[in-house]
Image (tube, rainbow, N blue to C red; front, side):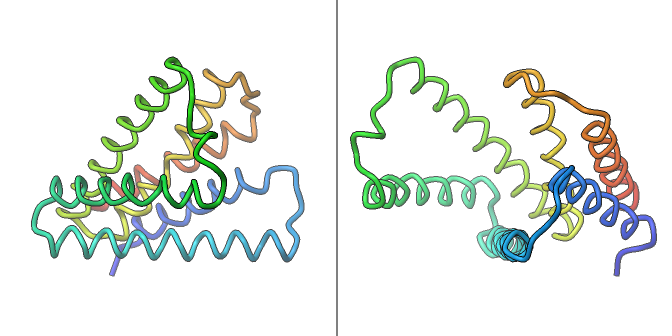
Length: 168
């Protein structure tokens, strides 16, 4: 059972993420349905990853196999839903996409490694702090406005992550 500091951290992370999600907008039933569904999928893949890496016995092996399977299965599914021609891009776009893929693989590997060592709950909560990085990427690379509300929400998420990390 998590202690009070860890529970406070999970609540702060959750509140910060929700605050970013519903900034300036009301929430309708359809939106709520999709938000709850997304939360269920996040919970499911977090549990699958946590159990999978522990059963596999090797974080690197689990990460490599998962990424290989995604890489093999994703293109045919995409092509079935769309068409192969939309996958063809220029050299610059391909390089940027490959760079993003490598960064994604490394980030996933770090999370899987953490799940192999510690409890799944805190690691999963820390995993979702990626919204802080998304806000910063949005600001510096996509030139989005970083409002006071977004900064405050990111600070709340970061404080929650600190609480979770401190209690572990």
